[in-house]
Image 1 (spheres, rainbow, N blue to C red):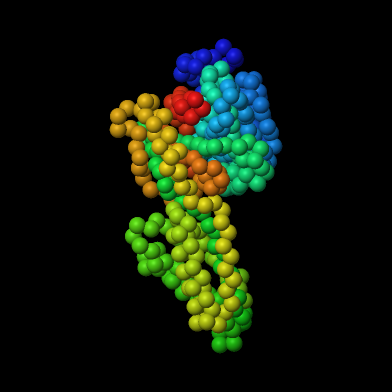
Image 2: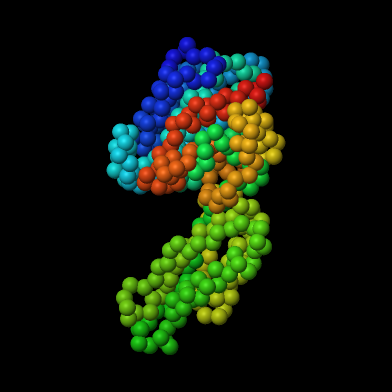
Length: 391
């Protein structure tokens, strides 16, 4: 892969090279914000193709910049680089070589797609500034924010920003480009109950926090069913309970961790208000103290209308009739690209990863693998969008 490339789609030899690159990344997964080797591999390729490479943006994040012509428009394309802390159960040659780590969400493929697009665009005409953003720690929902806090958009201004994700279970050659709410916010809610400990044989001398926990569980489950309209999407899940250490001692304290996911800020605000009301009522009813802490991990991902339409128009020639969908299955997972969309208008879209037992396997599954057929199509998508945007 050298400077002899043209503006045509990847040929078979080039596709083979990027497939090998994707599998190299897959075999050596890195976690969270600690992605130095993946970042350096990306940086070396971009420099080879003539990009100005800026390392160390929000940790191991990096940005490759290419300017052409006199145009003032600036576009950002983002790919994530991190893997998951789980054991791979695949037996193919490029399976993870590091125990307890696995590219189970396709970030290896997203990185390879953006590199393939970078390779094509390096010697192709456009008019403006191309910012290629390679982000660590999407899985921890911290990487985008870290790059933004480190001055990402002040240092590399973008008029619009775009990202993609593979979608297992949907056929290759299909895509979902959806305006408006697309993925859910993620919020962690900590509930800490303070009562009065005592002997299990003398509960009348204590203020037991455990009946409070039991009542809270039931009350919290009514938020979705009784406080939200049917069209308001939300998931409220209690993921952790902690109390006591010995069977015959009433504990002083108990705690809960709750996951709240919604697709609009308005719904999230409703849920938080209702949680606060439920907690205050339980304080009075049971005579305990309850501390409630809300931590926003990522906002809802909401695609901007104009930029979503731009993606649809650019991608339309690449897909057969009926394969470019404006609506997909409701996804209540979270994507920290949402932080970027709060700063810059843009669109996050999905490409079908394939059907069947293998390529239809869900992300975050130990048998998942990215479908290498998407590398050529994904690179075509980025090439067409950049060519249309930077005219």
